[in-house]
Image 1 (tube, rainbow, N blue to C red):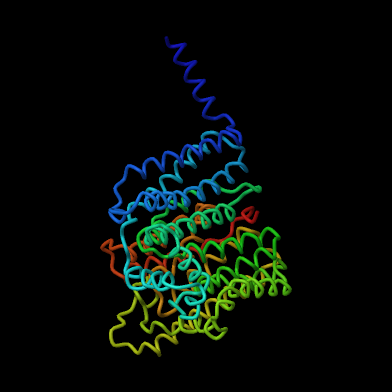
Image 2: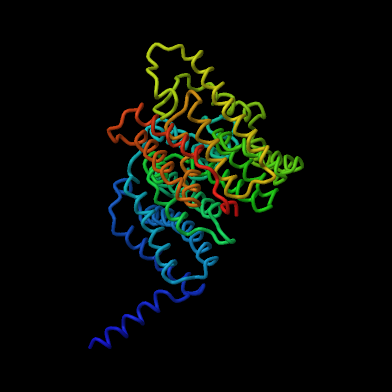
Length: 446
């Protein structure tokens, strides 16, 4: 009996550690999607009560689409790592768990959705595309207006449709994280799974119906493409990031460092501009004026006047009651610009000798430090910094405390965890200091 049990043990271990192959990996992904769809069919979604069978099926299929995207990036990473059966199964399970995590809050409609998104979708869906573009609906850039228009036309519950778009963005973002954490040409499956399961990323779209993964994912792919020599793809990704959200400016300072290291050229600016023009062309053809397109960016800079909007920033350390918001706001902008200039100058000086890892570390430092000192920041504006801190921690465990501090501070401001804003701001300051203090270890540039 003991010999037979040992034999079964060896066979089981051999089966789990064997190479799965492309066919088996795809079969695992298909089985995961089928099981997920079956699970959705058993759930009672209050927002779908009274909806027809067609709307219900279309909505459930829309919620399966993000899982397909997550699995596609996971299997891409698994293929580069040899199609191991156990890693493939673990990646599929992590993707399914990531979607279930997001579905916990699928019924939650945030204030932004109730006040803005739902009305924008209704207004865009009430008329033609040209009518929607001429109305200048919403305060978001046109690329997201296209998404709002498209989702308003789908036979899917609007809140679910918009969140599904954000979930697809999460998959796109996780793929970029895996690529930036790649070693020897192999994407990091572990980093991809952590990115999908990180609470602040899951809550951004799942609870708050935000789309920060879209602009952040484009920015990270822009950095990854530049570091791998695909200059035009990099320029296009950076342009798409800016076309989604103005917060892309937190990633754009890295362009100067990439240019100094000859990873980008001045000629790539043409690709950047042409991509921006391509994103604006449908709106222009639909009747929106060029002035209206530019006004979106200008209006966003003056939309808020407070020193902080629950952001764990420099101003969260201060008692802002009664302070001159313009004087202190200008002071914060000066600090942010000065810190950014110092970091970029340091990066440009060292750019020819910098490898992939050091570029990732510098991008994280810039994204965190600049947002920390800027006034008028919202709590979710640290989104890009947290994701880049994850990339740093995945490449070097010495950065794990910085990720833990940044994630906790960000999550506590998004979700009431009993921590004061000043405590969260102190943690974010400590995360930035940790990123700056840890030197690049020899051999980590690859």
